[in-house]
Amino acid sequence: MRKILWSPTLLSGRLSLLPEALKTFEEKGVDYLHVDVMDGHFVPNYALGTGFIRDLRDMCSLPLDIHLMIERPDMNLDRFDIRPGDIVSVHVESTPHIVRSLQQVRDRGARAFAALCPGTPAEALLPLGPYLDGVLCMSVNPGFAGQKILPGTERHISLIRAAMDHMGLENADLEVDGNVSFDNVSSLIRAGANMFVGGSASLFYAGASVAENVDRAREAVRAFVPDP
Image (cartoon, rainbow, N blue to C red; front, top):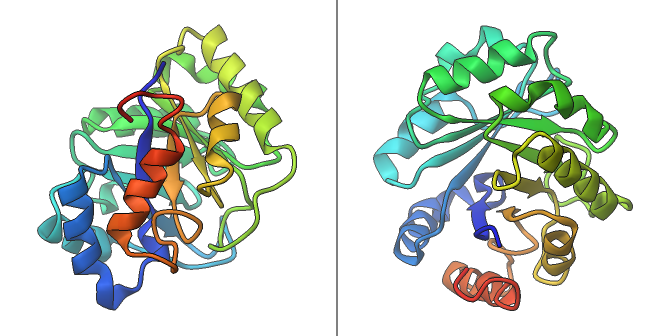
């Protein structure tokens, strides 16, 4: 069984409470911090940018899970403070040079993930196997927080996992981003995912503290992994 990993999306946290949340995530041993970068072109919204990433490095020691929802990432990677141990996800739909983008991520010592929008078939991954360290599957249309998970997500995850297995990536991480909740995470694991972006439906759930949410998230997957 692949290890279950959690990556809280900082897009869901209140900026005034961010230092306290980061401290809690460090103390709780959360795996990554998810940073959504949006350019207003690839998705119809703007979000966290290069300055935020630099400041985040000074505030927290956890590795970053940088999700680039931008056009032509192959022309823009130098703008970001990418470090060894990070994950960088680039969308296959965002550039005609996806292989070059993945290679550039690896050249910086980070793990290269291909990201797929909900309507992109799993077969799009098949030429990319030698360049992949993992895959990010969007379970909502990218660009906005707080959406409901799309019907057919579990089927999409299953097809992606099958494609990964076919490419010899059986042990690689399959991340899900979009409305991952305490209630649906078990079905996402059964479909083949093992890494989850936690937002307002889980790690930043408004009805409890961040620490309580981390504990609840881990409890929700304990049936699948003895020590998640």
